[in-house]
Image (tube, rainbow, N blue to C red; front, side, top):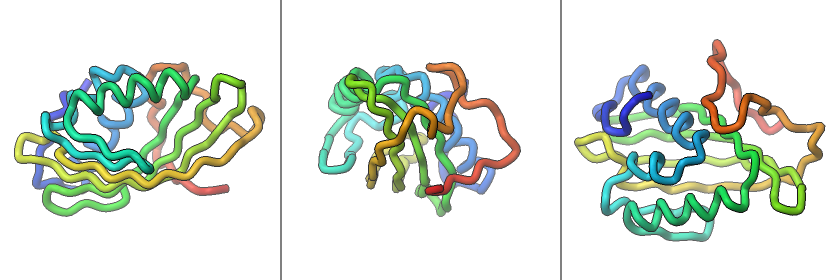
Length: 156
């Protein structure tokens, strides 16, 4: 497991991709404490219509998220990087407490401090109701996504 701050800016293509995969693996653990350690104490977030300030608010937000988004599995893909910034596109699937499956599509803009902690995250996310038969992500719950040669995230 890669420490949240082990990969620091300025990013190369390889280190940016490693940072994205480390974030994906942490989020797939669905452990709010583990995920929150990747963010600076004063990190700011925009997540859909929510604005959060600080690691503790982020941790609480994630705990609530995974209480409602069941069987959550996420895939992130590096879009681009420059200096201390990374842009990511992603998809994740989950089912709500009523049993409806969803696929969420989105983009994130990340900015890091010199220690490799994310100090700013802006996420734009859209949800699409799907049938269980349309699910794409089937690896064991709570585990990292299996390694694949290259993952292409698309709407189809």
